[in-house]
Length: 233
Image 1 (cartoon, rainbow, N blue to C red):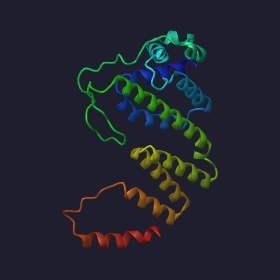
Image 2 (tube, rainbow, N blue to C red):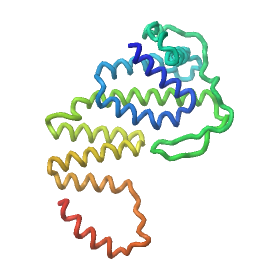
Image 3 (cartoon, one colour):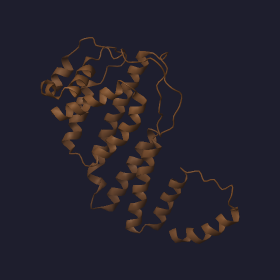
Image 4 (spheres, helix red, strand yellow):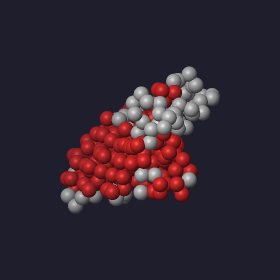
């Protein structure tokens, strides 16, 4: 449990600096780790994150500070339990964050938008951190639900699990993760010889790309696709 507590502490350490940038990396890393992590590990992370999550509208988040200090001092992690996190209620606010100067905000999907300025309220940032943690909990629950079907002996079960996870990442507007699962689905259809389903999946993948054809005649594209597309059907 000490290692898991340290992991959660590191997450909150990062969230104290730049929530939006952390979210971009955190979602993809959670997806990667949960592919091979034991279910007990996932459930422990959910419990620790749920216990440490700041209450909406509250500026008192001592559990976040406690976890953050634990990540920097591994010897202290053994004394941190779920009960102590739940009962601790001292008033150490996370509003005291370094806010001098602009910080780069990275939107979902890797698109960089306007920098975060010090004019943004501390309470708004606290809410943002809470939303990210809630999203990670939802993501872990979703991955835990479909984990056993990802490499199931039934290819149909694997296809349905991959499809549902793709839908989940579409719902949170993570184009990069959506593409990851579209490619997984395409490979699985290819292994099973599902030419029609693979063709539809390739079409969905293609919709996420923009092709510049300024220097290529449309007739060349027409000739190429007339030769290639029949192979998928």
